[in-house]
Amino acid sequence: MLDAVETVQVEELMVEMGNRGRAAARVLATAPTAIKNLALTEMATAIRAAMKDILAANAMDVAAMKAGGQTAAFLDRGTLTEERIEAIAVALEDIAALDDPVGSVMAAWERPNGLKIERVRTPLGVIGVIFESRPNVTADAGALCLKAGNAVILRGGSDTINSNRAIHAAMQKGLTAAGLPVDAIQIVPVADRAAVGEMLKGLQGNLDVIVPRGGKSLVGRVQSEARVPVFAHLEGLVHIFLHRSADPAKVVDLVVNSKLRRTGICGALETLLIDEAVAIDHLPKLVRALHAGGCEIRGDERVCAICDGIVPATEADWSTEYLDKILSVKLVRGLEDAIAHIARYGSNHTDCIIAEDEDAVRTFFREVDSAIVLHNASTQFADGGEFGMGAEIGIATGRMHARGPVGVEQLTSFNYRVHGTGQTRP
Image (cartoon, rainbow, N blue to C red):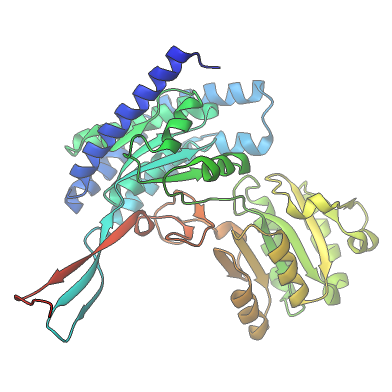
């Protein structure tokens, strides 16, 4: 635990970072699109040039995680490879290629008295991002905030602190090359939890919004303690409902990809709901394919009765985000039962229906209150990059301001600009 002197030092450090962030935000708010894009492309170049340094830093983090007994899913999220680092660089270039949201006119109209009114996108200001385990968030969050004209203060998890620092160092080279302040993207240099507490206080009014990206405990703490607005990113308790009209040619590939492509991401399938009317047709094939991929299946009584090798599910399984090669499977009495299950156990993140019946799809889309709802597509598409947003800070599961992938547009606010010709109000 920090003693009093160390606590004061962390508080002073964080307040100073907030002050520097606010100063940088004023510069970024009016930075030309070309300059922001230059910074992003230079960051991509710097990250590729620093490939060996980033991999060496990541190797230190991975070794520490293994020594600490972290799970396979956690290790997967924290591990970088040459391919993943190249993907980070490509994401930066993709963000540079996006339209600049700042200054875009969202709506415009004229009043009977001749006043012309515009609603125009503006930066949020200074954004705090608190995240765990995924070092690519350092680049994604920093780049998205920059493109939207915001300064950002990043606080990554201690498990990947070396990787985060190495990526951040490369990004600062891009800022310098473009003539932008290096304080536009700051990273908290200490692992002390007190730094998170200071961010939640708002850094003396210098943080305008906080985006948490991590486990349930982190998001819960941020939501309960933050004194500034929060873009909530809750757990991804993702469902697929296999409707009786599902095309058998699509079922196995969609379910296996949704579950096993990468088990540690928030869009990974966690619960499969199967219409009891077609369980015999689909369940044995699905079980064979999932078992072949090393997936443990936890099923209700009827699933256990149909197939061998199923672990009996408990009540807790329906509300568990495994982030591992484990899938809960339940038979339901059709569409209404499936929707009721999702409403009770879901996290409003991502849910999917496999069906050919258009009426069933319309009902599912209308009644499932999740940030992302899919039809006949892998749940692993729940990703800002796959949505054409370049990247994302996270998937917001709340209903205010931002929902779904948080990209550049979601990192802006707006103001009203009113043009007159001398009108006075009677």
